[in-house]
Length: 163
Image (cartoon, rainbow, N blue to C red):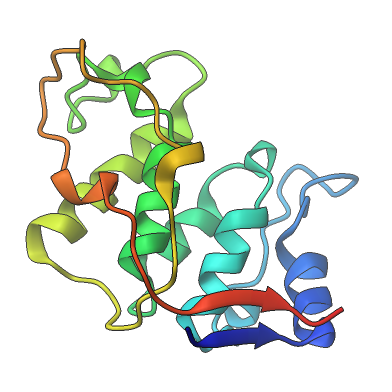
C-alpha cells in the first residue's frame, strides 16, 4: 500500500484558501484559480474534495472535477456527495428541472457523467471506499444513467496529512 502524505504546511494552505472560504468574506469573493493551480497531485485534490464545506458553493468542486488531476475516486466522492437521489427526474441541460437548493449537484453530476463517458480520469488511483457515501438508489428510476463505476471500492494511494 502506497501513501501520499500531505505536509502540514500544504494542508494549512489548502484549508486557508479553500475550506470555509466564504465565511466572513464579501458576497462577491471567489477563491483564486491560481491558488488552486498550485495543487499538483491527485491526492491533494482528493483531500480538498473530502474536507470541502459545501456551504461555500460549488465553484471549487467544479475546478476539482475539471482538473486533469481528478481521479476516479475523487469524482466518485463528489458524485455521492452531490446527492444524486435528488435528481431522479432531472434533465441536466434544462435548469428548470433543477430541484430547489441543489444547484451544486446540478452543476457537478453532469461533469462526473461526462468524465465517465470519456473515461477521462487521472491515472493516479486514490484509495476510496464509497460505503459511507452511497445513497440507496435501487428503487429510483432515473432519467439518466448512473455510471456503474461510482459504486466501486478503489484500491490505491492512501492519503494522509502530516500532523
